[in-house]
Length: 255
Image (cartoon, one colour):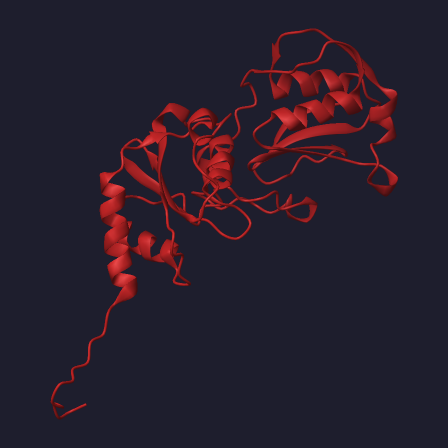
């Protein structure tokens, strides 16, 4: 409008910019907290945005969605960083902000753009926290610099299975899958039922700690010929196969 009108003026409010500045100030005012299940359990399942920090550097910017709020998101990330080489979980912390008026604007992208250059933010677009890609992607090479390449699974990390006595391999594998902080995908039988080799094999489990390398090596020794456990990017697979050329695959045990 070129000519002024008496008693009238136009005003344009930059809502995205104002919200971004407010969020940045709010993040600056928050003390970081350790990213572990005990601390995260107090975070509400609310809509909002969050940062993950490695030391004092922002490594990841995240935003909730309709499927998962702050509690679920942070709980999942707290599991993802466990059992990793080259990564001390004590160095990872978080800051989270509940946003009561959650607009349609892409807060995640805005925050990433703002912090990029000030911090690494290198866990974004690195596959961090991704779901299991499934069997069809097992032969796809992991991207260099991805989270799973930088911090591969520690196959010798000790964990406790609350099992004891003579048990079927099916029950042992089910317990392992519930305990591990990453995916253990196993071959199934017809109709996605447990494979018959797992049903027919038993082990005598002693109480105490084990590692994924140790327990899968023990299981493989109890199975018929042809089984192979392999560590891939961010997951372990257990199939009746003999494959030497998985990209970046590490064979754990074979029968």
